[in-house]
Image (cartoon, rainbow, N blue to C red; front, side, top):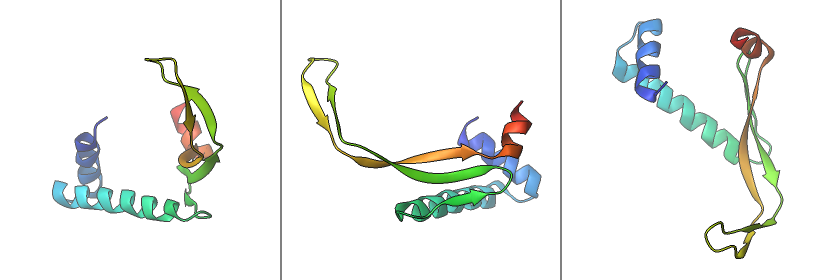
Length: 91
């Protein structure tokens, strides 16, 4: 499903126009991004799941084109853990 299809579903379900649905979706995504920028912040949506961040250690990798070793720096990456109800709905 693409973003435009999701916006269509939201507008039909909430009985709002597509512009409002798109703005609502963008606002929700931006709010999640801002919350995850903080180290300790998590975003929990009951029945859906939890957005959080995890720290990856620095490591060495290889450039697949040249085979040369490169250093990959430590970084924080986003993580999503689905909730129990969400998992059950997918089965």
